[in-house]
Length: 217
Image (spheres, rainbow, N blue to C red):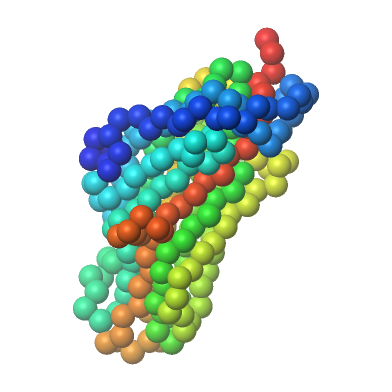
């Protein structure tokens, strides 16, 4: 299904112009490694990201990557499909990083539009994990009504709790996201909805990377 993404094949970042400052091996640092990172989209699955509706791009300075959606919509009420109240998307990414470095997701910024009738509610959820790792980092952001505006949410992780990619081993990175709308006590003919999508490329999700050097062998 990866071939159906708006992006075809690997997404290569431009060479960063930042020159990392001297730092102790194994310590977390602000500047990214100067060599490029490449992200291959292995699979994309879910009712919130049908084939051809999600794109991934790496920032030129290697500090973040962005996922843009064009059909991520959950809704409830009115003539909505009974299954439309919950939409999800799982991205399975192969992240190639410069030799001697590892990375973690330090924070993620989510944006979209939300329209909740009085009595309705909505939730945006996300979790992150590396292939073969039992460690999952779940985050959840609830929204109450009434609401009719753009929404945004940020997942932040303390340095001590960052989940790092294994050094010297290529492990796929998984991102699971979910939008859920609950009609609650809203009048049955009223529609509430939540999007994490874009028709003009302005609404997207940004994942910020933290870097550190792998221990020397």
